[in-house]
Image 1 (cartoon, rainbow, N blue to C red):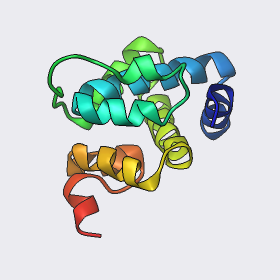
Image 2: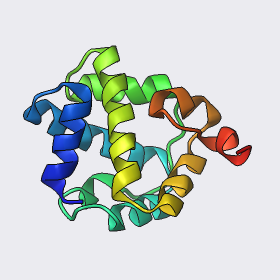
Image 3: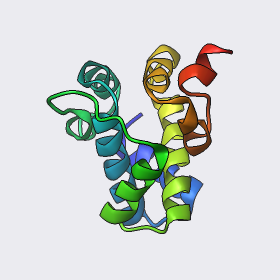
Image 4: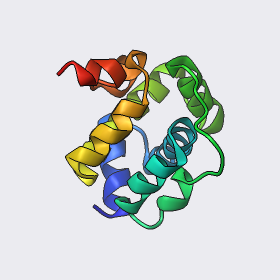
Length: 131
């Protein structure tokens, strides 16, 4: 999937205009890249459009933070309301499920705590392992 299609699908799922959808995608990928291990972020980046790859990459360790902090970061950067940010996160993960391999998405979801399930709209962490 190319970057314009990724952004278009995110916009359609959220009701955001193209500019806000693009900012949301960028902010969500940066925040996700910070939240997961750098090696996993690199693996995910490798399956995404080249324009998105730098957003996921970071040095150092994964920064563990709860879903509320994930949303707060999106709200602050884009800016969006909490509800809009939550919808955007769910939409981006939905588009990720179309854009990357099932195994890669599962690897990313396993890196998130179980309490992320409600935010991303799919099982994460221990919830994923129980399926």
